Image (cartoon, rainbow, N blue to C red; front, side, top):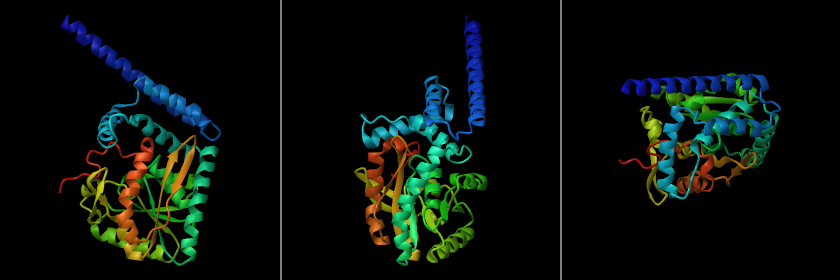
Length: 313
């Protein structure tokens, strides 16, 4: 009897593994066939919903979803339900559509967002102030970088940890954006040299510095980078710590900080807050981040990180 049960389990496992491989091959074939350029995203989204319903999302996404669901329950309450697997699937589809897929509708939406951001940024440059753009990890960090890179003056230097650095030159070219990356995973000497070069370019109004203010502090602690000091504050009614990079960069070059985030509402939309100096950034950023997460929890990408902003010192 035991032998029969084990044999049945192994046979069933091989069957579902084969199905998963077939679905992955079909997905790749559809991407190549359609190239996303004129395909309605609703068609792609329907296929992704089907993949999730059939429980073919993949083990890693499922593990992340379990952590995300617990974080959502702790911070927002048991009545708030967010489908983290769908959030990850939608992000991948939009990333591809905006780069290799060259989807016209998505690219038009990103151009509209960039135009709104330029309207907020250009007067600051005209007045002689360098600019630090502070986008949230909403909808897609890649799309946020594209929007920031398209904003006036048409160049951006992204301060990254690791993931966004894999966004290759070819991807950026296809997305129609001029971005460079400064990684805090370099040696301490390299970090200082790269950041100083970015600051000089920003001070001369040749570029905007782009840094994600909502990255959790322990994400950079793992690298041993000296740029990972945190701001002590309160978020969600409890003691918290925010990565201090936005404040420190604004202080170094006396920049104005423009906080913004993307959200998805029958298309990609943008929220832009008023420009802030370094002092206002220090006091208001925790509340801005918390409000953004509360208002658009279905768009925030970092729910799956274990500690979030609540690390015990």
